Length: 167
Ligand SMILES: CC(C)(COP(=O)(O)OP(=O)(O)OC[C@H]1O[C@@H](n2cnc3c(N)ncnc32)[C@H](O)[C@@H]1OP(=O)(O)O)[C@@H](O)C(=O)NCCC(=O)NCCS
Image 1 (cartoon, rainbow, N blue to C red):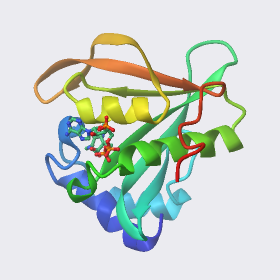
Image 2: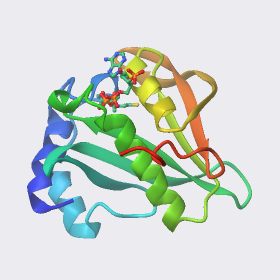
Image 3: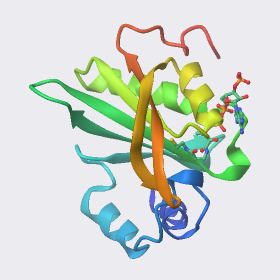
């Protein structure tokens, strides 16, 4: 993330609907600069990387460390592209590239991602990025006025890399 990308982060904080069902209400746009000054948006709990298409900022991906139990940690990822960059093959490639990056630098076996039943674009994008649907978490998240299910996907280190052999 660069200084000029903070505008994108502020937009995601204050523009209802820009991230679809993941909109959770207005957030302090001033927190964007504070977080950037603190750690450049890179921390074990949550890191954010910018997705660029031909050098132009198209959106962002996130990742963070999670643990279910015991000593096994894994990473959970997320993504949001600006509307004008959606449906052009950027989303699945960005998530596949993020997986390669995470498997390269973290000794993890598993990457997890969740999305809403209505979000067909993200479900298809995750499958194209090498993820498999594991199941449905019922009524796990309160968004847009009601409790909603989540489709849980994962990609393991040993799963095929869809970027191998693509240009
Ligand atoms: C979800 C998102 C990341 C997907 O990225 P994208 O670049 O738009 O999707 P891609 O172009 O990589 O498409 C991947 C697949 O989804 C399909 N797809 C894309 N948009 C679609 C839509 N609106 N409805 C149905 N299918 C769609 C594509 O056709 C492609 O499948 P195909 O190869 O079988 O044709 C992006 O649309 C986005 O940022 N949406 C808003 C934020 C969001 O929902 N984030 C995820 C929260 S969990």
